[in-house]
Amino acid sequence: MTKHAKPFRIRTITAFTILHPSDFPPAETGDGENDPVLQKIDQCSTLLHEAKSRLSEAGYEIQTVRIATNPFGEWLTLKHDASINHLTSTSDDVSSQPATKRAKQSSPENKDEVDESTISERLQKLNNILSQHDIGFLSLGPSTCPRHTTSICPKIVSIAPGRFSCSANVDACDVESARAAAKCVQIISTLGTDDESHLAGGLGNFRFCAASCVASGVPFFPAARGASLTDTDTIFPKIGFGIGLENGEFALNLLKEAKSIYAINTVFATRMKEELLPIQDVCSKLASEFDEHKKFSVEYLGIDTSFNPSLDKSGSIAAAIENLEEVRGDFGQCGSLSAAAAITTSLQSIPGIVKTGYCGLMLPVLEDRRLAELGMKSNDGS
Image 1 (cartoon, helix red, strand yellow):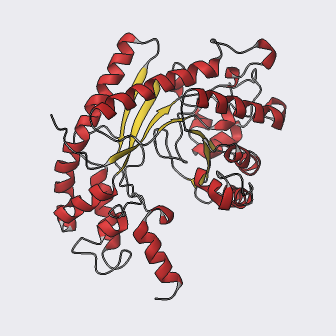
Image 2 (spheres, rainbow, N blue to C red):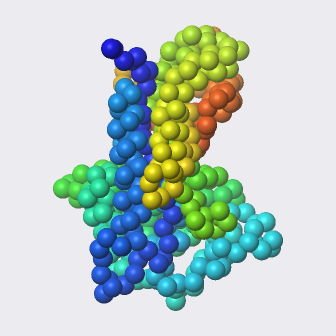
Image 3 (cartoon, one colour):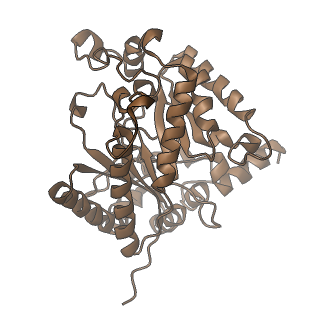
């Protein structure tokens, strides 16, 4: 029996876990099957590879499986016995403050932080475990401290062969964090040699970004992050997982069918629901089976319904939007903003689909052929 051809690829199946300073006991205690980090990565790996197997069997092309953690300042930089009571405070005077300000006030004193060599050892340990479990990508969450952004983020990105990603949280009007993120980009651009393909030519900056208002559950890198230790529901956390798509050609077909901004919501509600429900069914069933039969608890977080371009000939999101009647001329000209708003609203309101992450319009200049083409036209004055 011929399977129904799928109109998009699954870009990532991302598992979300929470690491703790105590997951990194002193080296003299020895590793082994009871090693906390090994256990957590092993659980994520078991879930991810089972999800990949089932979705592949259902006819989907799976490009990557990935893991994302809570912000690395909560575990990578702290001594194994550091107190984190201040991180889990739920007092009104703390919880009512903006997330970044709260995190910065909760940052440990230097006496609770490990030295650079210990950070490198932990990163290498994680790198080895990921290699053993055939996991190609891990996001260490956002930096919430400008000092960490400039000193630790470049170290994270530099580890060969390029499994690690991270981000820097930059809230509105937070000039110090913005400057630190900009400095980090500059530092990463200078890393590496011609022999280090994961860093050559500034490629390390594909694994770092400045981000704002990113909640846990976004499956796309480098902004992906797990829940924070400051979240009150993470005392006995489940391993969550979510789905991210690569769907530029699917976007093109949907917008050609819609023709007008006014029809986008109707077309998306019908066609996207039809194509996403089978993924949801597979993932929901898998989560239920893990809860029932396995030793660890799993939560299916949903699908990030975002339009995400590919480098295929028909994979540009910008080119897809140019098919709408209201968009006059090139993407970016009259009608483009209204189209973007209508698409975003529709992506976030597909009925019957459990959603996680960004659920919006992705327009990366270096990953969308039409955007790159328009950028070149702008640069040469045409």
